Length: 160
Image 1 (cartoon, helix red, strand yellow):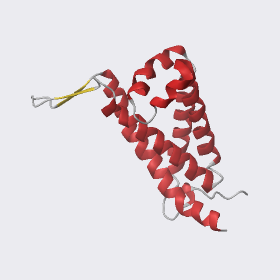
Image 2 (cartoon, helix red, strand yellow):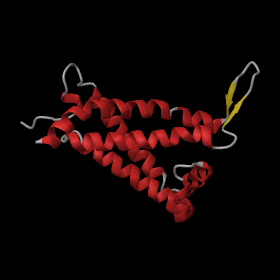
Image 3 (cartoon, one colour):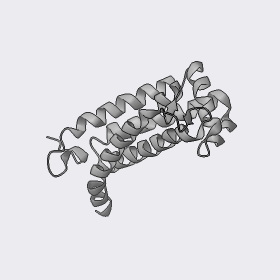
Image 4 (tube, one colour):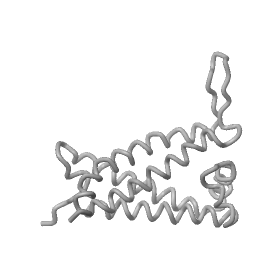
């Protein structure tokens, strides 16, 4: 029987982390598939063009930048899935997920009009784009947990 060398096999009760891993695989596959539609490419253009981190993707054009992100999301999904058998791939996929959601969460602050700060009774009001981006905090945390629980075994494997 194959033993697992992943976050879920760590010390303590880590088995439920398998749920998080496979949910993230599904999320990255679905996000990746969406990037191959014109509607998605048009929808993310405003975020990309305003970002100091990924505005360089515009060199690929509207569809090219979406395709680049879609392929990247498929790679992350594959690494997370393979990470169920290899702690190094688990750590790499989780790290890439952390970077992905850190960048997308930054859109909350870099995209004009997403948030309007005020001293009124509603100090932080966001539009639909802001609400859409708010979920990335949770996804960033899930990838961080998978990364932190994969790292000890990944480091051990790399030293061998």
